Every structure is written in structure tokens, then in C-alpha cells.
Image (cartoon, rainbow, N blue to C red; front, side, top):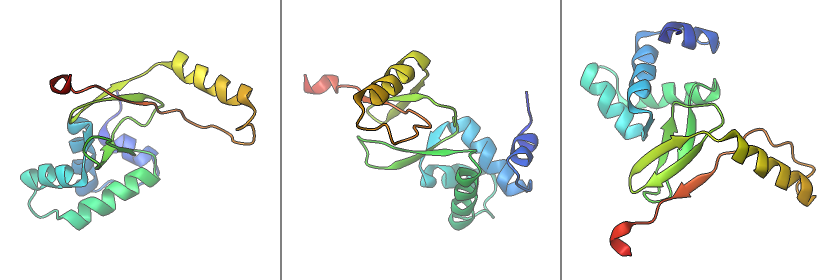
Amino acid sequence: MKTTDEIIREAGLRVTPQRRLVYETMLELRHATIDDISTFVAGKDSRINLSTVYRIVETFCNAHLLTMVFHPSTGKCLYDITVAEHHHFFDGVRVIDFSDPHLSEIIKNYLKASGRYSSLDVDKIQVQITVADKSEQ
């Protein structure tokens, strides 16, 4: 298994203690808002402020170390450590990753067969499924 430093370096970035801490934070949190990340990081190193965390997270997104996901129930953007093609269940505030290559292939084939989107080169499929609130049933 690759170390945090190797992952950051392979993304073409210089390893710094701040970048290492933010990446390791995301390994632990998996899905998090910028405020969640900043709070967690500040608990480990109070010298790292929100703007530093924000710049690092944006750099990680540009380097494909993180992706951004919109949470339909909270209306907030979450950063996601899993950058490979995968899908999400949204169950209240919980976010559950799941991978289903067959589902992705069905969607890609549908888009291709429909003809309406044939000019688009689909790179990644990410399905978001919202779980019904049991208290409202």
C-alpha cells in the first residue's frame, strides 16, 4: 500500500506537513465539508487555518486526489477521497459509497443508444441515490 507521501508526490505535488495532514484527514473522514476538514485539521495542528485547508483541498481536486460531491439533503458540497468511478447513497446526513461497474456500463450504453448524447465523451458515471426518510412514511 502506498504511503500518503507517495500518493501526493505521484499526483505531481510537493509533500508538505499541511498537505500530508489534510490528505490523512480525508482518509479518515472519507466525505467531508471544508468546515469539517478544517475543524479536524485544526484539532491536530491549530496553526493550519481555513484558507490553507481550502487551498490544499482545491489543489488536491485539481490533482485528482479528491472529488467534490453535492449532498442533496444538506445542500452542502462534500469532498470525497474516493476518486475512482463510484456511486453514492445519501441516507440523511450519511454518505455511503458503492461501486457497481455493471450499473455504470448500463448507463453508458443507454446514453450511447439514445443518440441524444452521442457527441459527448462520457468519462465517469456517478449515480446519487437518496434514501427515503423512514420517519416521513
